Length: 92
View 1 (cartoon, rainbow, N blue to C red):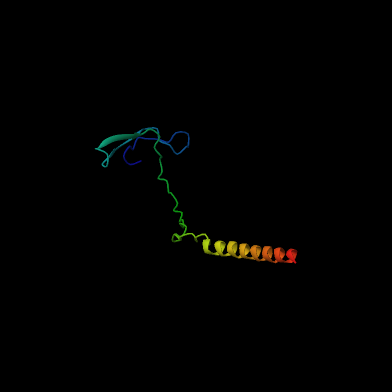
View 2: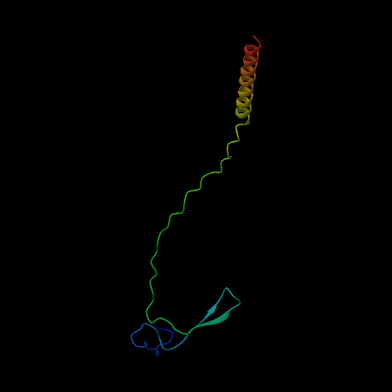
């Protein structure tokens, strides 16, 4: 560690024996301290991720009301016609 040249490694763990103090310029220049600093820099691998594709919103299909009404009217008309035929057959 160049900032603390007297720091040594604890039991070949990769951790230094002297805390590392640093200031953050983003947060009102507060001082933070790392009590377990690494002796050697750590390389963080880059993993590329792919986000799911966004499918545009589609309105759901409306309930086929016209088709249902037409089917009900047709069934009722057939029922009335059958009823009239049965009625006139019994009258004869």
